[in-house]
Structures are given as C-alpha cells and as structure tokens.
Length: 579
Image (tube, rainbow, N blue to C red; front, top):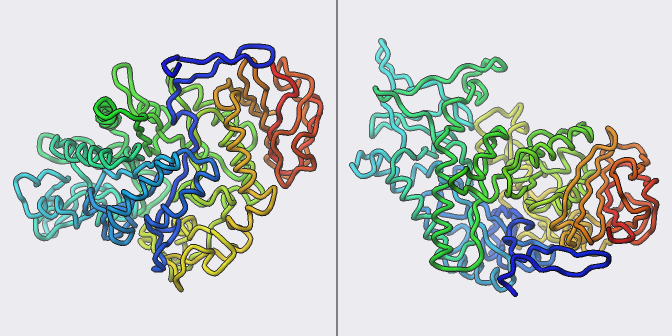
C-alpha cells in the first residue's frame, strides 16, 4: 500500500484524493533557529547546540516539521557565524561535534528534521584556504577573487572597480602580503570564493557530502545570488557598475546598480549541481528526500529559475520573499492578493510554494506591521498552500528588542553611524528567545547575555502563553493542527481581496470541508458576504479558529452571507458540510 501514488478515502459525499507520495517538505512547517539567541545551556549568555537539543520537544509541541539552524561552524564571528573558518567543524562557542551529533540523534527520535545553514559565497579571512591563497600557494591562489588594482600617477593604488560592499565601503580590500585586492561583497573579513574555479566548486560539494553523512536533512543556502560576479575580460579586469541616482554616498551599497555582482546567469546552475549531489546521496543511502532552501533577494522572475529548468531540478524551496520585501504597514488587501497570486502564477508547473514573513535579517513581524497583526500573519502563512518558514519567537508575537548603540554588535550597523544605526541594525530581531517570565527570560542561568533581553519578556514568553487560551502561541498551535486537514494540506487555493480592508483565502479539496481564512487588515469593523466573493459555497459555516480579537468562539455557526470581522481580526471558517 505504501507504493500507491494516492490513497482514496471515502469521506462524506465524495472521494477525497490523498497524495500518499507527496514529499515531506511540500507542506512542512519550517522553523528558523538563530542558535546564539535560542537557548543557552552553560550560562555564558550565548545560545548553543545543547540548548537547541534541550528545546527540541518544544518544536514538536508547536508542530514544527524541520528546523533550519543559522551557522554554528567554526568562525571568528565577525558576522556572527556567517564568516566560516572551517566548514567541517563546530565552533567551541556552540559546543562540539559530539553535541551536534547528539542533537541530530534526538531530533530524529522526535521526528524533527535538521537543516544546516550552508554559506558558500565566502569564507572567513582566517580560513586556511584564504591564508594559503593570500600566500600565493599554487593550489589555492585562485580560490578567491584577486586583482592588483590600478596604480595612479601619484603612486597610490585604486581598487579594481567601484563595487560596493553590502556592509558599506569598497567591496575590495588590499592585502599587504599578496600585494593585491581581494573581493568581499560583505564584511572585509569575508572574502568571496571564485566559483569559476572548478576546484572551489568541488570543495563546496565535499562540504555538502560531509554534513549529509552527519545526518542533516538538507541545507539553507545563504546569499546564493552573490555567488558569481561577471567574468573578467581578456585583460583580467572587471567593469564598474553604473551609478544609482538616489544616493551620492559612494560607500552606500545602493550607490551602484547591481548588474555585475549579483544574479549572474551561471548562479542557478550551481544550485542544480548541488541538487544532483543530494539526489545521488539519496540513491546511495535511502531515507527521506534531502532538500535545498535557497536565499536570493532577486526579482521574482529570476527566483523562479532556482526551481530548475527543462533538464535539471534546482532547489525545492527558493525562498519566497515577496511578502517580507514588498508588504508594508499600510498595504491594502489588493496588494496582499497580488503578491500571493503573482508567486502562485509564476511558479513553474509541478513546483511547490513557500511563504516567509520574518527572519534574522529583518525587523520582527509585530514591529513592522504592528503587534495587533501577529496572529493575522501567522494565520496567513499557515493556511496558504505549500510550506511555511517561521522565525523563532514569531509564534509568541515577540517584538524587536531595544539595543543601544553601545550594545550594538551587528557589523551592518557598526559600519555606519550612531545617528541612524537602527535603520540598518539586525540586532533588535536577534535578542534572546523568551522562554519564561523568570530572570533573563529563562534563556540563560548566567548574569548577562550577548544581546540584551527585551524588556517585554514577562508578557511574551512560552510559559505564560501556554496558559492563555487565545495567546499567540496557542493560536499558532491550533493552526498547526488545522494544517493537517486535507483541504488545507492539499486543496486548491483561491486568494481574493474582498475590499481594500479584507483578504480572503479559500482552500478546498473535493469531498472535504471548505476552509476560508479572512483577514481584516486595518482597524475598522468589516462585514463580508462570502457568497459574493466565492461561487458555489455552502450556505453555512462555523468558526474553526479564532483569536483574542474575536467576539465568537470555535464551533459557533454563521451564515456565509454575513461574517463580521473586528479590527485586525483574522479567523478560519469551516463549512458545516463537505462539498
């Protein structure tokens, strides 16, 4: 029976097709852990792998299928783990390889999959490969992008191009030992690999194989759209990027239009190669499908290439950043409708959607859109088709923590100015997880933390919210239960703006109940006639999920012709009969 493509279950008035062969990730609930801020097990104020292991049962409690862990590999921590000095070693700050293996073992016992953050664009400048490249060793000299720059008439030297780092300033750094510049699209301690060198590509391939052997279930690929730069001309030179008009600051990342340093045509093919490595490992070792989740902040038409092409499969999950990038506090329901449907319409046939609204690089959802909309966004992400990616603490409604200039450690902010550091700092979204209302939010037994604990932890924490029936946490857990319903897990999807104020999402699988999620985005009371929004609906519905803003209870009946929504309320309705 396990070899059937689908099982057919008689349900109510019809046959419900249940796809028994669907890969585990297609409708999975992913949860991003930022280890430094998740749970500290040894009292040093910094989260670690044993802290993750300690809290794996919490992930099971809240219905998480898989967790993606931000980097914990050996690193000088110039960019808090995204500057890796050894791609096959755990940094002692987070524990040992044995701690990692114990975490994977415990996760497998609980049925929670582990996704490793893979950082291929660059290494640390303390990586052995870079040290050997800088020393001019023949085997390693072309592992990175090097250029002598240009000698000026006055004897000074200029960088090869006007390319600008994401973290401000020139993307080229002079190396006194090698007497050349090296490229770094991020921090100067993060030199970019040369992916036009096949030896580098194989080096990265072996990193993937190493961690697959260690038992990971897939990889989140960091900053993939930076992997290639335009190829140098016959003289070994690179072109300047054209100027943008909106800033006159040559150190500002937006000073140039990025046509040579991101989104080069070769980049998706790198992902196709990595997919082949995962598939070969699958053939050789069996088990559940291993996956690639790729981070690219590219135009949507380019993102779609990462799914694959006519001859090659790419990433199962090219991150959908349409909501996180393009929704704003005052976006109306038509804007939501467009962004959601545009992804679904552009997605290649046979591929699966994914939805992201928060991560470690963006301000928290409640801080961007308002604390009153936390449940609204969780309900949206978890009732749309495909998989969802939730950043730690969003299930609690955590807000940005205040981090003073003195306490700021994010290089993206530290490379700027005190007068506007909050505009670029990622620290507020990275403050420690709130586990309880006790000292230090239950994050550590120590007396200090690497970033300050947010002052509202006594109101927003796991322990307190477990005991409040309609807390953000309990709404999230109820949502995860609803995601198991056939119509929400596998059904068709219609997304419509009812008005400027209200968005509606209909999910239905033939023979099952009709589910409709409604979202009142703004602060007015709205009334909706569902029969005028979707055709062929049953006449009556009942509340399947409510929030603290609701005046109704789960199970209350209502007519499809009249649904009242309170300000910022989001609900899930279920038809009273199958259809």
